[in-house]
Amino acid sequence: MAREMLRCESADIDRLVEAGLPYEYRSGERYFDPNDLYNLGMYSNRSTTQPELAFRMLFRFTTRPLDDLLRPKTWDFRVRFECTECAGAAPWHFEEPDVVRFGGSVADVTRPAVSAGSAEFSAKVTTTGARTPIVSPVLRRLTRDYLEAGYRWQMIPVPMQADYEQVHALGATSCIAASLFLAEQFRAAGYRAEAKRGWFCGVLGGALDLPHACVEVEDDDGTYRTVDIAKAQLAARLSPDTGDFQELCLGSIYNKVIPSTASGNAPFGRHECGSQVPIRVHADIRAVRSS
Image (cartoon, rainbow, N blue to C red; front, side, top):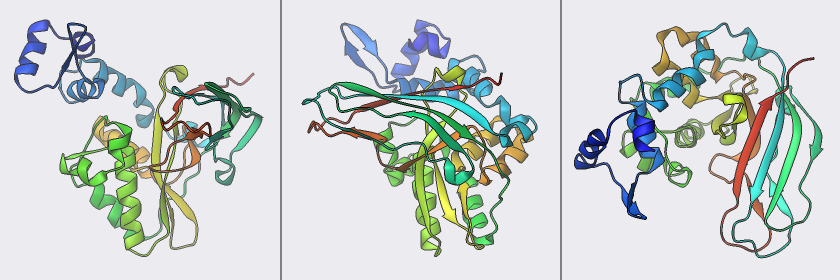
């Protein structure tokens, strides 16, 4: 896995281990944390690693005209829940898509019934985009200060992301860590703000499950706006030609994100069976082609 992800030879992996790449033995084989491998590849500057190639492919839309991101788009939205240490049949709770207040819609909803082990939520979710740039100069300054702070976006385990002080101490950031921190900065400046979780859509036909986080903040004109700080950071790293998309991330909405009712550091769902083990939540979100 390591050689394939980093597109290197065994000798290269040995050198990385000697330099401090952590691993553990499992069944006589070295096992590396996928997050470590992804971050190594992402910042290797080799241009051939899987993370670099995937990043350029996933974010190629940020260099294109924005009109396609502002039109209504419908998604076949399916989320599967797994309670791996289930204590029996019980209701499921899921933080559902929250798109109506942003001009979207949710239809054909199927919610999970009382059950044990696993369940599924499905719906047709329509998102749309709108240009609503931040009005407040204070919010703009705080946002720009964060973008210019030099934190490097990395793949980080979700439980760790909630501790943004620990993440920032490593010189790193993530969508959850950045959103939690920025929401706190906005509140300290006197604004109503909350980090919220959702999903980034249209990725490899739904094959990648990409939970996302952003900040919702009440602007000077009384309107709530969305600050998608992580996507602005990643677009800036991809190309200097992504300025229009970066600006869109600072207050506006676009159709490749489905917000949910979950707060920034909260799980997407739970099973009321009494198990103390968090449920696994896997989303499969695929674009519905127009007929």
